[in-house]
Image: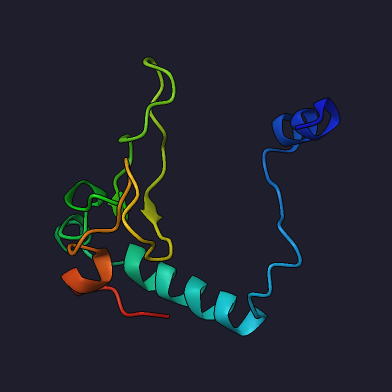
Length: 106
């Protein structure tokens, strides 16, 4: 990775990926589903916690991520990704979030 690119990532805090082939319609549907998901009660979101998945897909509550010991992230998150062949340490497994129910496919 170039030094210039690294500095841009640090300074801007947000990056955009282009040329990925994901349609604007699919991205809009995903955002609609995410808004609906995060509006659910905590118990419904926690039922799909990423700790229940060997592939680390699913819900993450506020404060769970700690990149530094003294600071916890102040956001909720939902890890998504394609089902891939088993690869360690993050293999999809039979317990993928879509199979647990509660999150409709986009």
